[in-house]
Length: 90
Ligand code: SF4
Image (cartoon, rainbow, N blue to C red; front, side, top):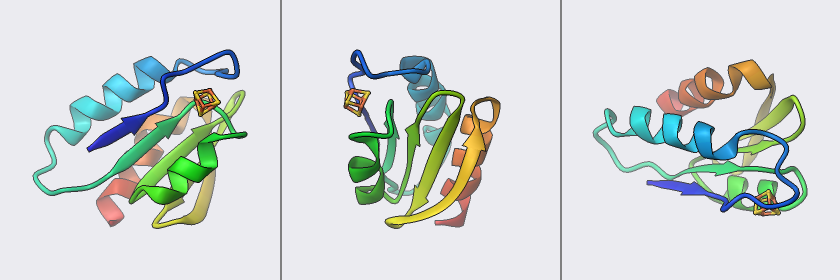
């Protein structure tokens, strides 16, 4: 299950594109997992912490959470791969 923020004036990355890419990858995973893709670091972390794996994307960097814990900070180019690596660990 994918939760993504609707994106708003705070969004600093292509959150819709990332959410679509994540959704395609999740479709190949055959177990229930909640992933949150959020577009900012102001309101994003709350929802990201609430999911099995979540990312709060800031300008050029994002923070990834797994089971409510902040696990890593990644560069924008690595958002998708890093998020999927954490999904595999759940
Ligand atoms: S998480 Fe941030 S970017 Fe996404 S809708 Fe909420 S305030 Fe906007």
